Image (cartoon, rainbow, N blue to C red; front, side, top):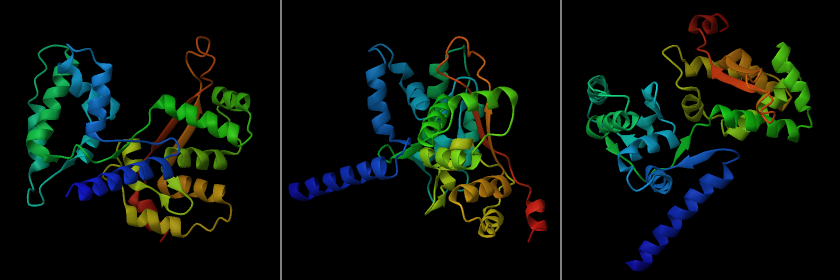
Length: 270
């Protein structure tokens, strides 16, 4: 029995490491258990009431301004015969009362709604963690270096709003480093949705796949840009960094998002 337990432990460890290395690039994967252990290192002993908020900040499902995000749901497993869990959770969240500006209390109450109403918490499951705007900048800078591009040129692009030189290869590198795309597997739609904060009601995967199947570009870079512009309506743009005089190491900011493609427009092409 102990031998089987050891084998299981080795198997789990191998798979976690496999996910975290083979498919990693600049991507981060975490579980609730690992995040809670991480937060225990950050918080002082008398700040246990802020542990839930710390978990939400590290796993990117909590924001002090907007509250809990829908991406928290990926850490829970709803019952297959429960058709009302989303409505119950929404009603619970609507009833969360913030007695003050105490963000820790609001985070704890909001997450409790998911604990009580949404489903079973899976604290062991390793999930994709969306990257921040600062991480977007770092990834672009890394791609610029790898592709032999001029960072100063891109800085000027951000200032004057001109077209990004070699945008196709820069975007492809950006998406690969994000773990959102590979030449072999295409887009990772689940991660892309988490990174961009949801697709919205107009999202139509079947039409988008039809559009992508019609792309005939030979170049890997050109194919990605056509996917992004023509099928997914992806927004990838450099903007001036407001505090450039304070921090010269941040040459620009990166706007990255997805706008919902009109189904009617896609239908017109098929």
